[in-house]
Amino acid sequence: MATNKILYVCQEISPYLPETEFSKLSLEMARQMQERGCEVRTFMPRYGCINERRNQLHEVIRLSGMNLIINDTDHPLIIKVASLQAARMQVYFIDNDDYFHNRLMTSDSNGNDYCDNDERAIFFARGVLETVKKLRWCPEVIHCHGWISALVPLYIKSIYSEEPSFRDSKIVISLYDDNFKTDFPDNFPQKLFNNETQSGFTEDIQTPISYVELAKLAIRNSDGIIINGDNIPQELIDYAVSLGKPVQPRCSEDEY
Image 1: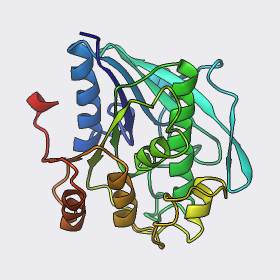
Image 2 (image 1 turned 90 degrees about the vertical axis):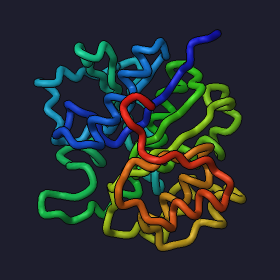
Image 3 (image 1 turned 45 degrees about the horizontal axis):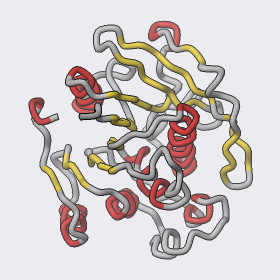
């Protein structure tokens, strides 16, 4: 039997960020599946609070250099990588000066959500998918963790639907207690595809885009949902069930 290939798209991973249940779970899932013989690739944003020297991040020149157009503006895509010796695995980082340099995760040091969180999510999702294409790697399972990864399922079901790397991939979204407070701007649907019409994908997006609406967008385009938070809105669980999506409650460590 062929080795399973799993792509983890994570909002936060320990030890690059302070250890939380979220960051620890993201690490443990990838580590344990790799130990079980799966071929794993793991991605997260390179937030400005990550110490590159201490964590020994370095740029992967052959994967960097692409520009992603968001809202009619070019944004350079920089790919960095670091090795987790204890877990015997690598982590790829999506970086960009506009969206991640000198930035925290969702909000600034005063607790104010970044006004371009929508574009940050777009850049991260597209950056991951473009990098996997460059790697010429075909994941069988794509597991998304956290709101900043929520657009990956949409892109795979739309503009990347015929891309060989993702054509046969199954998509799982894990929902956490990572709510953002500030709705995305009303022009978010137009930014998603750089003003190109994607019939059936933007027409049913209801603005303003709150955390709940973004999660619904991810659920609609995923093959399965995992509940990994204590305060997930019941509305989201009911929505997934109404669509016939399999919903799994919080994982224990032996269920990864």
